[in-house]
View 1: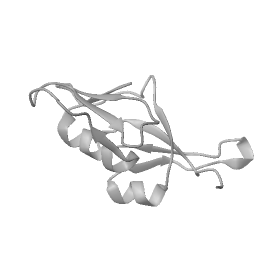
View 2 (view 1 turned 90 degrees about the vertical axis):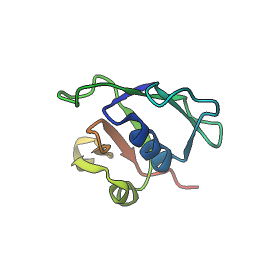
View 3 (view 1 turned 60 degrees about the vertical axis):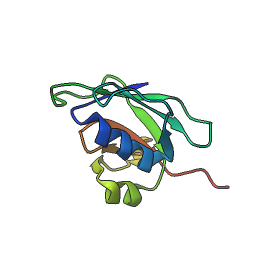
View 4 (view 1 turned 30 degrees about the vertical axis):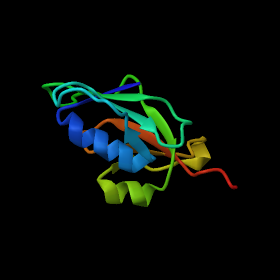
Length: 110
């Protein structure tokens, strides 16, 4: 998976904090894409890639995650749409600090 970002270093750190990821060891120079990986080894590799322009239109692809909306909000995410269970939409739509949309589901009961 790839995410575009104007400040790819900061956004890589944000996604690491949001999802429990870490930067992959042996990363290249500061201007190169940053690879982040699931610290527990279960999630996909994500590349956070530098781009000169900000996000302008809706994502063509997005990430769905289990998580705590308030914790993500505290990290700097923004809620774009609330769940609408009556319409079969049990998730929040959020944006990371650079405006990339992602959906947040309540974690399944343990």
